Length: 326
Image (cartoon, rainbow, N blue to C red; front, side, top):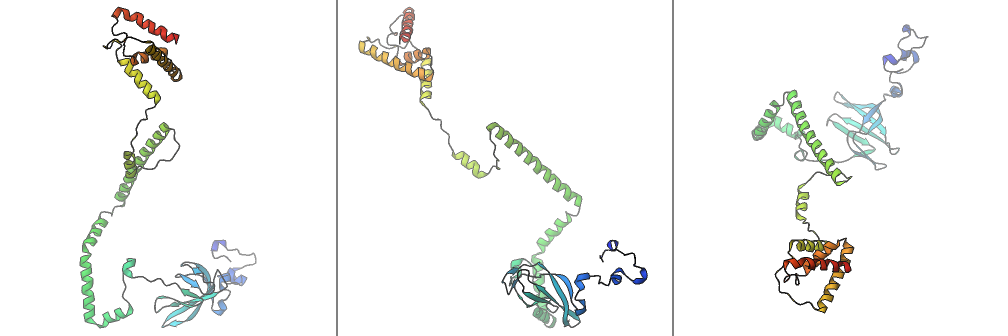
């Protein structure tokens, strides 16, 4: 029968005069757990109290692993019963026995397993150091030792008093749950607002840069690395020609230079130079007027310097026609 009263099934032939439903069916309330109860054995769920090693398969069994153990009484320590727990290893067919030890307030490994030694000093584990049996006996019988022990405890208490006072003041300021909850929520709201603004700025930057990546928070190392990088524009051939064009547009064609007679060799050189500039202008997409300006800038107005202002217009027209003839 089930242990819960609302789940018990009572057959039609059952009557209250026949006793409980377990008695009527001839079974124990604990069912299979009490199958060896006539031998003084009760099956329980036993949890391993510490880390152990199986002596047969040499496998590690961690603390907290549970087993179906057979519990029985193995003796007495004065008036306290000593219980024995027998169980089977879940990794092999080895059976091991563990007994309670009321004298040491611990468990004793009888057979089948061995304990994993894990010892440390109380100071290293940040726990309170408890006196052992010998120290307790000496404190009870030796008044001088007890007095020294009390003096050491008072000295340690006086040294820790400032920290204890701080803790007490801290506890006094945290008595109201509403204040603590309000402070926590306000901090969370400020942090959430900061994260939302940062996320909004990152999305705007990724949209401008047409990127689809995850941005990490900025750090001091990133700032130092960004400052150490120096960007320098590379001047190409096109940039050089554009700079020459700009300087030619700013300069005057009526520069004061001495007139030199033009020879056949110089005219041939000028023609070849103009032809080379025209080829370059076709490649780079310059117009013929831009070519003329660049040519006039290269020639320091040798022939136009001594020409009167009214005669400069026919000379200019002649240069344009020469450019068309090329």
